[in-house]
Image (cartoon, rainbow, N blue to C red; front, top):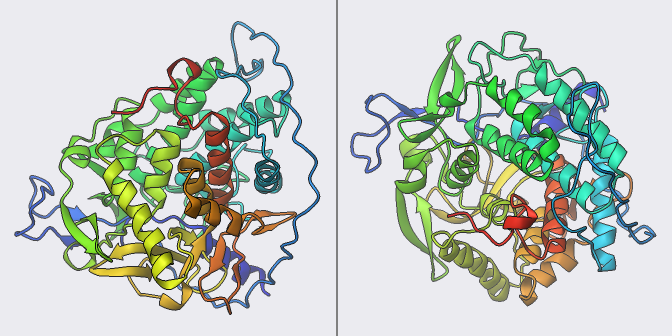
Length: 491
């Protein structure tokens, strides 16, 4: 297979897109506030749909479980040095008692997921590849990378000196990161050189790709976890973030991104129900307030299989953006920040409707946005999208019902968040061995048994598995909280 074809396939399979390339004007009858400017554009959480050659399918890796020895305890940490500089880093200190995975299945899973990081960390920059062996990334993916490395360190998968080296290398890269005139990180970068790239991995030396507020919010959440759990890095992280023009991430109380259009950057509202609130709560950790995104999302109530759910009124037809109702933002919200009382009924019903589908059809159901190992290489599998239930659609809204899948990261996350439910245990057992012994966990398995496993391998699946395992080991406390405040839930 030609190298360029492989590269195109991987790019498609790992991209978490951020804004639509065909935006529409706000309809005058809309019940939500778009902007004081009537021509304000609404954008979707997806913007990457290049034409690529169709490659041959990857060979499905052997899924036999490797022999795994018990995880070692994390070594005792030495006292902190008084200050930290790029040339004189400190030894990080934990803010919790040493979390441990006591179940063999969890230990095996953690070691498998960490294989991805061992293969895909770049020593030149400290960045982690978005897809296996692809030296390219978005900031959503680097948010996952930060949280995955934090989880691995806390669980004893890497020694303190390795963690220290990786953090120092990454912070040095971020301190010198090239920025566009916008003052915000470009949408994509090379993980090998830290140079700005387009979303198709071609050079973007002027940073013309714009920014994604959803991606930046996830990365900022990851940085917040690092500065709060390892205070010795907080000054450097705060100085890095101070370089960025964060005021551009919110406009009139809504999440604000930018897309290239006719040689210029066009600012657009970004995010739909679920993703929008997850990102807005993440920005609050940095005192960035998106009040309309949190308090005034345009919501309507629907029923799927008799279960009541909330969905975004802004759909593909009236805004150019698909209103995906899928697991990812709600599961990340629970693992990382903790669900507040407002969102809990939505989460409970989102879980219930998937469980009920399994009881009704016999099809194990764990929906998500995920990369695929075959065209179209990335799908949003949703309970509801654009007026229809159980939709698996690409970034242009085209449906692929034959490619519905069980998501590995969704299965691990549901079990971590609801360990006493028999259905989540069934999900976790189903995906426990969906891994390649050298590359990490695969994205999942297709519902159509004739298609077998979804052999795509990426950062988000493996990082979120590590996050879910740390959440379990911490006694089901969200990742953002330090030991002294673990019991707090975000309001």
